[in-house]
Each structure stands twice: as C-alpha cells, then as structure tokens.
Image (cartoon, rainbow, N blue to C red; front, side):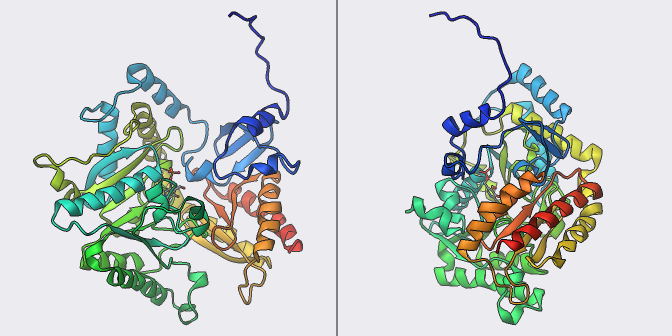
Length: 467
Ligand SMILES: Cc1ncc(COP(=O)(O)O)c(C=O)c1O
C-alpha cells in the first residue's frame, strides 16, 4: 500500500516527551512519575563540549558526563568522522576466530596502557558484560589449572557491577537484586571503604581503617574456604554509595591477600578508567597491578558502546595450548565502528593531554566542591580525579542520615529535578547513604567547577529547608 509522503516537521514542545512516555521503556526509571502529572520525560537533543541541550533549547552542564562516559566532551567531530570512515570501509565483521584492523589496533593500545602484563584484551559491549566475562574466565582458569573447586567471588557492599545475572550477583545493593532472586550463587560481600562511615575505632585513622577493611576480605576467604574462592572484584574508587577512594595501603594489602590465597584480583574500572582518576587506568595511578581489569564507558567517550576485559598473560596461558577454548563472547565483541570510535577518542586523550589536565586540576575541583561543607546538609565531600560524591546528612555532628521518607521526599521528590531545572545534570542517589554524584567531562576547568558549586549551593540550601 502506498501513502502520500508527509512533510518532515520538527515536533512541537512535549511531543517527543509524550512519545517517550508512551513507548520508551527506560532503564531504572519509575514510569508512574510521567503519568501522574508530576513530571515529563526530559528530552536531550544535542551536546557541545561540557554542555547538553534539551528539545526546548535549554542548556545544562553535564555534571555526570552522560553516565560517567563522555570524557572528551560532546560533539567531537573527529570521533564521528572516524566512525563514518570505518562504517564505509567495513561496518561489521566478527572477531570470532577472525580479526580486523581496528580491533587489533585497539587491543594492542589497551594492552600498552594497562599495568603489568595485562596484555590479553577480550572485547564486550559494556561493563556488565566485562564483569560477567571476568567471572567466567576466573572459573574456567581454575578448572584448567587443577583447582576446579575455586569458583566463588567476593565483592563489596553497596558496589554496583552491572545487571546481567552474574554481574548482579556480584553487585552489593540488595534492593537492586531482590526482584530477580534467585541469582547466581557463590557471591559473598565484605565492607567497602567508606571512611565517613568507618567503625568508631577507625574514625581518625584512615590507614588503620583501610587495613581493617582489607582484612575483611582475608576473613571472608578463610570463612568460605580458600579452595572455593576464585576472585575478588572491586572498583579502585567505588562509585555506588558516593565515591569511596581506597585508603592508603588498602589496594596493596588486597593484592597481598589475593596472592596469599591464589585468588584473582579483578579491578572493575568501568567508571575509573580512561582519565576519570587522571590516568588511563586508575590502578596505574594507585600503583597496584590486578590480574584482570574490566572497563567500558570512557573507552569511546560514549560515542559507541564498547567494553573490555583485560587479563594477564598467566590467565591466557592455558588457552594457548591444545583444545582449550573460552566458549564465551558477544556478537558485538570488538565491533569495528566501536573500535574506530575508541581509537579516535584515545587520540584526543593523547593530543590534548586529558589525563595530565585532570591531574593538574583535580585539587582545584576538590577545593571548589569543599566550599559546600559550610552548608548544614553537606556531611562529606569525597572522591578523586574528576569523580566526587557529596553526602547529605540531617546532622553534621552526629552524621545522622536521612530517613527513608526524607530521602524519598527530598532526594527523589525535589533534588534531582531541582538541580536539572537549575541547569546541572548530575545524580542524586540513595543506593547507599544519600549522595549527589559528580563525574563531569574531563575537559572542564575552574569556570565550570564554579558553576557546579553555585548551582549545588543554591539547590542544596533549599533542600535543607525541606527536611
Ligand atoms: C563499576 C561498574 N561496573 C559495571 C557497570 C555496568 O556497566 P554497563 O552498564 O555498561 O553494563 C557499571 C555501570 O555503571 C559500573 O559502574
């Protein structure tokens, strides 16, 4: 059946938002909000540098780099051009026993950036798949090397590691898991490194707190039985809960514990890699070499979906010989257009010195955010690089947190929308204690730090009056 061609017209205000409400099932989204009259779906149509614009033409500072992703900023023509060239030359070919130039070049480059002998790059489409891949590799590696009972994983409370069943088991957020139980068994949790909420006896000694937290991993391995534990998964700086940097000595001690019990140390760098902490991999900055790194997001600055598991030579060794095969992979593993985007993005990192820019400016970012500590609602400002969490409290002296009802009313009901309305896109999160999370594009400097601080100051001051 033919139909008369319709003129192409720009949709009027709210038309796209209504269509989004009616057809787009959005991840981690409470959809009732768009039907009960309390909100409409914000539609972002364009990005430029550190800013994005909605369908009404309003500008927002992208305080979260999309989703911890757009490191090089929005609107980078060189990345788009590299992707277009690659799509014309070879849009797709799998790397299942074949290869193509961009996947080869990217694998070599990532191996170069990675610490130690982490030279074996297994591509995925994102972070959750990289975490799945790492757990499966850990299990198979021990089966192939004569320790077939080693299969359990240890990870940290409140940490987020993705939504596939295995990655969700590793995730330490009970509310994100309960609806999907039973999950993959054998995932054990230990305390994270939230120094602000450290046990009383460690409140004034970060190093001792780090030692205590690391020893909880040794304790869990002993309790589960060293012959049953395959891997420890941790983020160098934990995102969920609001930016927990590693206390001095913590990562070094975890490395020792993993060596002592022959347990693999997996650094989930889905957020922390590619400049977020001022190095291609945060583990380089912290000077500790894990057995596996998982990464994604910033690899392409979000211009294409791409992730990777990067493993040490030791873990590849059993697969070098005979019939041993890692029966695992994804159609999009090493996608040529994604790999071209990643290479062009990494070129920007090199030519503009983005890692050095973060290292030069990180203390100014911290100092600017720390000004907010004079507000009664701001209990803690913590983080590293261009990655910060601001914890909100009811009482700064006692560190009393918000009740569930207050978090619902102030965080969900007011803060997220008020920040956005004031021109700052960031995240108010209560997966742990209530925090505002910041992870802006790595290109910003003092003027944008000031803009972030001023918007937060005004909106958090108003939030305080609602408690
Ligand atoms: C530490 C960490 N691991 C894994 C994931 C999951 O990544 P993806 O959403 O690409 O599957 C995330 C996502 O934010 C993450 O922060």
